[in-house]
Image (cartoon, each protein chain N blue to C red):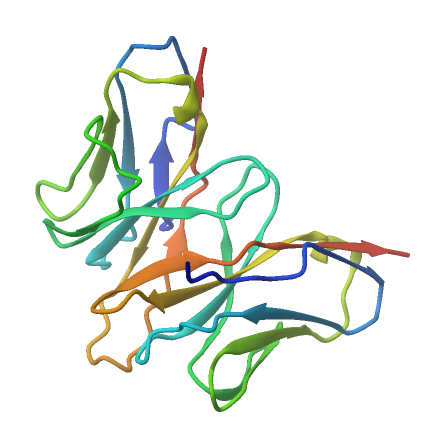
Length: 118
Length: 112
């Protein structure tokens, strides 16, 4: 399977604990995105990388959240001191950066990591 | 606050054509409009992408008017397996920058 891979698929943790999720993008894709999706809502953009550079962060990404993509391949999303409001599906997507401003940019999504904070 | 809005839900019979519209008044100038399908507990799955006018692929068509303030996903002959939530994804202009924004989602229910 050469699609976007996310691990773990499910994570249950107690409030106050730290959690880390991993995303492996499609191998030739240089852009990687993180989204959060709560029940009944559309995904909300958190951050994205082009290669190893984090180019944009949403205001949703509080100080407790940190994302890395150290070698421009896989990425990790860490949540420190989890709160019950962090319970959500965390989605990762990857794409090829558009060559020009008018180029296509199709994001392909993984299956997500569902986080439950008790 | 710039938003991307869609009808909450739609019902259709199998074999009918379904059209789902997304309103995105503040779409960024140079960005494409993308539509996704999502089943429960799965990530969004790409359906179609376009910039303006009409785009067609093997599963859907996408209609985009000249002002690009809305887009319409057309599913030609739906089947039961098309029951899912459909989202548009656009970059909304926030002044000097843009923000990737999913629509509010449309839950499509297909019945016999």
